[in-house]
Image (tube, rainbow, N blue to C red; front, side, top):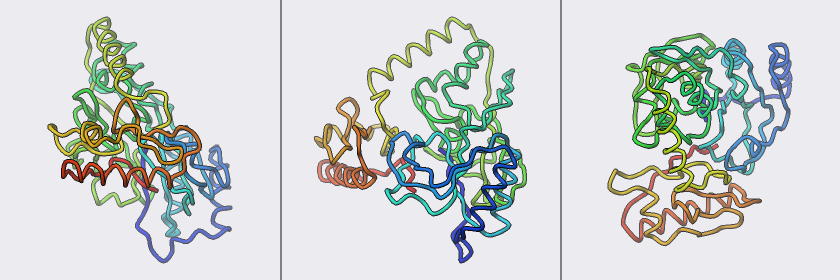
Length: 319
């Protein structure tokens, strides 16, 4: 998931005529568009109300044109990737959403860096490097979402993280201008990689380059299979969820263990429940609402605070 939007101001209201103009702009650029699109269809949690307009840009130039158009009029927007770590309210959002999952063309996979369009599923990028015997993303086995969202959130697992492999990002700034941002220009942090502030609050990642190096293909494949199998054994793969709900307070206190110790596994509100397999995963068993998820998150945080004194910080983004 990528969330990019300019700061709220008095010009942020979207009149019907502006929606119609943006829809026309999207169609002219060859983008798929949809009015009143339910965001529940586009988030891994499967909850959330509609956006007044969803646009699927097919190339970075379409992203730049649309964002520049919005910015010039002082209108707010949101950007969505795989939707794997976002919780959308039942009321939905007031702004149009640019869905980057159609932004997948133009991969260049060679040493020392492989570049992928931001909408490329992370799993697809990993498989592409494995086929060519290139190491760099094998630690991402089982990582959901898009590679653009993974970079924006400094996604990590199995001891690896995007901060360790990203070499540069191609970014469209809040005014629709193109920039190359080197890894050292990013303020990498746990589950975050804020872009340079001079790009503006609405800057959007459109491509990601990661460091890769030749390795023994058979050894790479074995490592991938080991990690993928371990993930299936320890996490609710296939269930509707938003990934880890809470950040780990520190290495000695993983959130899942704290939640388990507080007796929260299996805790349920409506259609939402804490996974019995891993305490830091919240599952939509069918028909869950954002309100169900909100209430369950509050109950888990309170239970952990009362049991261990630890205050859990959410990893998911709220819309």
